[in-house]
Amino acid sequence: MESDTADIAIVGGGAAGLAAAIFAAEAAPSGSRIVVLDGAKTLGAKILVAGGGRCNVTHHEVFPSDFNGSQTIIRNVLSAFNAKATVRWFESMGVELKREPTGKLFPVANTARAVLGALLERCRALNVALLTSHRVTTITRPTDADHSFQITHSNGVLRSPRVIVSTGGKSLPRSGSDGLGWDILRRLGHTVTPTYAALVPLVLSPQMFHAELAGLSQDVELSVFANGKRIDHRVGSLLWTHFGISGPVVMDASRHWTVASETGVSPTLQCNLVPGESFQQVERWLVQSASNRPKASMVTHLSQRFAERTAATILRHAGIDPTTVASQLSRDARRALVHALTALPLPVVQHRGWNYAEVTAGGVPLNEIDFRTMQSRKVQGLYLAGEVLDCDGRIGGFNFQWAWATGFLAGRAAACVNQGNRM
Image (cartoon, helix red, strand yellow):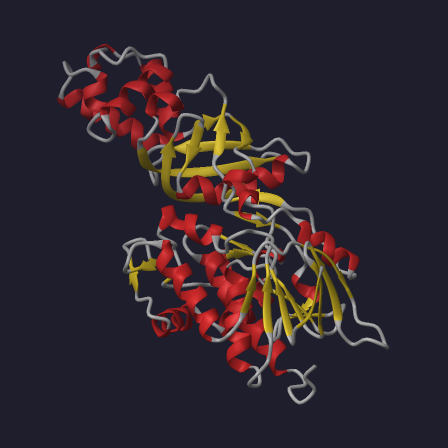
């Protein structure tokens, strides 16, 4: 079994861990030994699958309101290392970023491997030891006799006076993040808020028509209701799938549905297929369209605004034969159609599971860390970074920005403590 020492040990080699390692190595005294321990055989699984394999590194504008969590603390963390700093940092590692119309920033190379490759290469250049297949099971705090943490892993023990925990949450457990980091932190005195799958596709009742539209996407207005109140409302792109719904607007709303559902509330999801338009406006449009072309079929009228497959499906859902001539549509049938267009109930039965969740909602409360350094307020010499903390952003590169920013703060702070008292 291995017995090793390090000046700084980073537990978890994902985005936040690799960032922390790089910034620590750059700030630490020459000759410092910095080690990253990770249970996976290879690092960066989440980075490689992010953004459809292209890795949405950040967003061109990042605000605290893009995140769920303590806004004051999030604001301070983000201001220490903002999106512009991320762009400059990646450029310094040879990765140029491009802005897409959505505001998302991707590598010009259009592959996540460029991002991961740059991070790993920078670690190697800085002599950071990347210990894969080293699953950490416990961290024991320093004693008066021994001022180092004892980190027990699958291959032995490593001792270090400073430890950065960046073990992630529970999202995409196949990548190695299975929530074990929280158990370790609880034993060190931290608390962990309830955790939920966020940025996750939603599964609809098999009685719904989603499978007929699988592969089609459209802009919608989506609302989540709980206890008779609207708890979330947003506009964006929805993707119909064979199992239910996905797409940016659904992924962002999923957090609110999941939290409500798993806290004993029965949330409902309602969709306006003509975002920004009311029942009255859509009804007026239908009446006007029918008066202009009374002999045209209803599917022809709706196909002015929707894909023909969507138009036919919505009509059938409203109990209307798509071939019905507009002049023959009754007032009641027209109003049923408008309801289906502007207030369509989406019968969600569950989220798709942790294997499809992009991030975790919940974690170690932000008030248990010093936002200037990411050092634990419970244990001196212990730092936290990334998804292990109770902060989750919306889709679009925001969670990566949180990883880079917290990694920056934790890495630099850990490297700059007691530089004259190395092991």
